[in-house]
Amino acid sequence: MSPNEILEWFNQASIDKAWSFAGCKPSDTGKWTHGYHRYPAKFIPQLVERLMDDYITNGTASVNDPFMGCGTTVVSAISRGFRASGTDINKVAHLVTKAKASPIAPDYLEKKVKQFLSGILPSDDEQDIFDRVWVQPHIPKKHLERIDYWFMEEVRDELGRILTLIYDEDDSAVQSFLVVAFSHVLKTCSIWSQSSTKPTRDLKKRPTLPYDAIKRHLFKMLKGNEQFYGVVPSCVKDKPDSFLNIQVRSAERQPVPDDSVDLIVSSSPYVTSYEYADLHQLSTLWLDLADDLKEYKKKFIGTSYKQYEDKTLSSQIASNIVAEMLSKNKKKAKEIEAFFIDMQGVFKESFRILKPGGRCCYVIGNTKLRGVDILNAEAFAESLQHSGFKLDRLIKREIPLKILPQKRDEKTGRFASKDKADSEAYPTEYIVIGLKE
Ligand SMILES: C[S@@+](CC[C@H](N)C(=O)[O-])C[C@H]1O[C@@H](n2cnc3c(N)ncnc32)[C@H](O)[C@@H]1O
Image 1 (cartoon, rainbow, N blue to C red):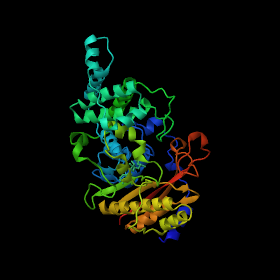
Image 2 (tube, rainbow, N blue to C red):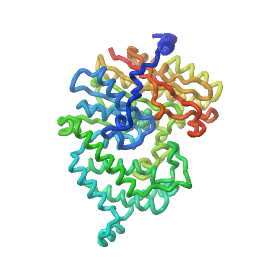
Image 3 (cartoon, helix red, strand yellow):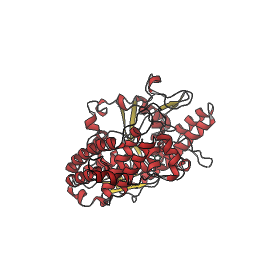
Image 4 (cartoon, rainbow, N blue to C red):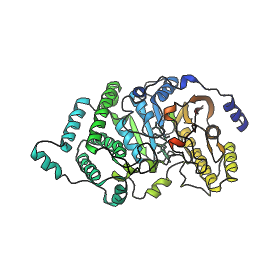
């Protein structure tokens, strides 16, 4: 299709209500291990499941997600006994996905969690209290200043003691499970404004006590693990490593051979939208995941910290968007250009790893920045075509209100706070499906 035909294809698309999943309750979208950890812009498992229903015809299929985030695609694939592979540059994403995709025998896990909680439990037993006091808090020294920016002293020390006990756990699967619970509760235990995904302090906030927060969350996770354990086929439980292949690395380098994947289901970052490295900084600091936060941020696609001077765009639609932005704001234009250039590399990699007859499904919405329409979906479609894909299908879907990002501030291009938001940034999004013939 020519760029004009692609634009027309999108113009003609009407919303397919069957893909809104409007009847889904939080207990459906957060089933199994999907509720382990909050994650901005994650998609719902039902969407991945339907795409697998539509396109996977063999029981030994291989599914990939180059931007796996908290692992919705990976977990869905594992639940059906498919091989799952993927990448994310965010180390928190990798930790979360690994734990979510690794079912643990429920009785054993419950025993382990209770043992762990008894290690931090305030108890009437004098000896226990004595032992507890002497647990040395594990607080990464090099990040102490930043940690103190976000946590009150008593909370910080209790978190440090909890982390010491987590690192004492010998079973690596149980340790990952505990680490994810720890990572998830950091926000409520900090003075990070509870209603904001962005790093904003709320000096009036009364943080939840770490012990209470982690206990509550661990019990919720135990239930999720039990349900998940019940659906995952035994072949996966017996040999988990031969089914799960995920790495912390760039989406342009998938850990799988050529022509080996049946289906890709993914949602990329948006240009200058969420800065995932900032959003997960509490976990990054406590778990000591990045020595240099600034350098770490530059590796993320869609970040405002990235620009290229030596690479060119192949998509005409993307080039037009960049040209329009150039007349408004040169820096923003360079960021958008870098985003689409990076995505070209990812689509090329998707083409490499898919089997002939395999499909890639990219979930993406359009945005408006500084008054310029950023036609991500149309540009993705054109770029997929340049990578060798045949444009196979376009699904236009409504995004449930509760997971819509807020309106952007026209001046800064950033999401405005909830109270100022008078409309949604992305009321609909697309699933652009490419076929490798
Ligand atoms: C929209 S989120 C994906 C959410 C995912 N679909 C889920 O359900 O959790 C986009 C992800 O892309 C990741 N990302 C950004 N730059 C990347 C890169 N260069 N390579 C791999 N992943 C990257 C971000 O860390 C983020 O997790």
